[in-house]
Length: 112
Length: 312
Image (cartoon, rainbow over the protein chains, first blue to last red):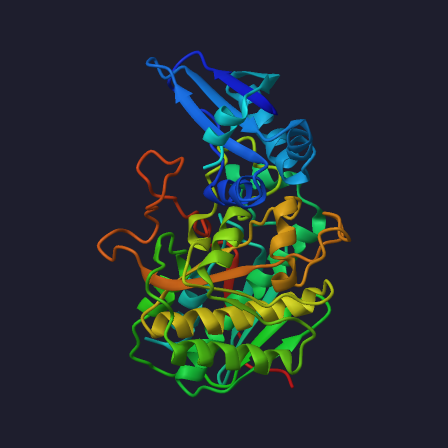
């Protein structure tokens, strides 16, 4: 079983600015479109003790699900503005992706 | 108070967004009537920073707001005149709109508090308190009556889930990215959202829509509700598709140069009546959590002249 893991890391220089935060309707959209359909299995956000680094880890069901997400015009539209915000406030962002092979037992952990 | 003084105050009390004085008002006082001539002009627009932010908008967005504002000031006065059984007539000419009041020399005891409240956009509503059915029906009847002579749509939304979607879109398309994603016009998060857009762009329609909105807004306030206007809307956000049927829009057909702008009137009870009207309850960008209103900052746009003998 191959899952697809995406790690988005944002780093800022000081705490005078906030990290980009989606509105709650956007969270609803992602929940309805990707969580409820099983395309995203899990997402976690960790913020460092200094509050300067935010790591968002999203586990997609497979590469196809990730591609659908990354080509979704709602996601693209928000991403464009997130990048503009990050540029404006000098927040660095990186995205790393990798295939994850898991056993059937481990996969069941993602089926909440 | 003399009718002329009241009318002049009502002009100054008309709602306007962020210092946008889109017109001049020439008041002529005759022995038996008062004439107010509203002429669209950019002469009195101030350079509020928020206006600079909106310089990118297509001309028809600036224009629709201009005619809506003209309608609001006329509607503001009409509401007062109707409430006091004073006859008047609204005339549309090529270059201006005229409100002719068929009397003068009246001395009226009045409290203009209603109009003072109307001037300010309320920012934080208690969305757990719905607009009562009687008020809803009164407002709906006024809209349907308006639409019997105007080619537009009646959109009244009191569904919380849909209002949440509208709220998420209540920001200008070019401001996203300068502000964090959660920052939207807070007043859109209300109990009842109304918009009565035209089917096609029409300045005279927007003028009459402004008159209607003044009537709706003042009616709602007189029934102990608060109101706020929202003219910011992210027409380019693909999430519009989820509300397009309600708003009579087709996201895949319009462009920002062709979309017919919507203006939203938001109604509800104050979330915390002890707070100022412009207090924002939700997470926001403002240091003291109040969103300042930029009022009409000049009185120069109103002139009064006394006409001794009317030439018929």
